[in-house]
Length: 87
Image (cartoon, rainbow, N blue to C red; front, side):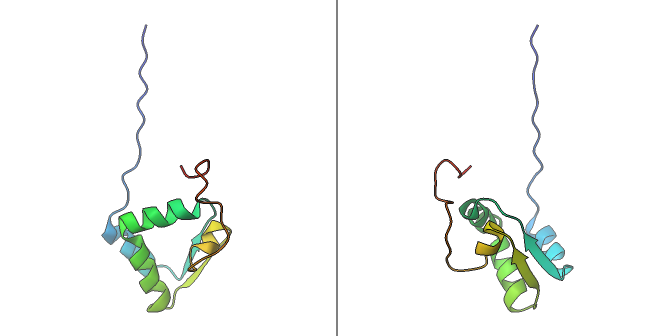
């Protein structure tokens, strides 16, 4: 007997969905994790420009812990380039 496993992953949000969510939020909180992976994903989705605009032009409160705090700055101490943690 054979069994098959199907893995489904949710499609990433559209640019418009992300834009709408940010526009209707007062606070943007980012959790910890791998800073480099998050930033690469944000750039791929176009989220980086939406977040920058939200912070600089729309006066949103931006915050986070660990990688979620580092992501808002030009630099910080992180082990995100460690190949063992970049997944």
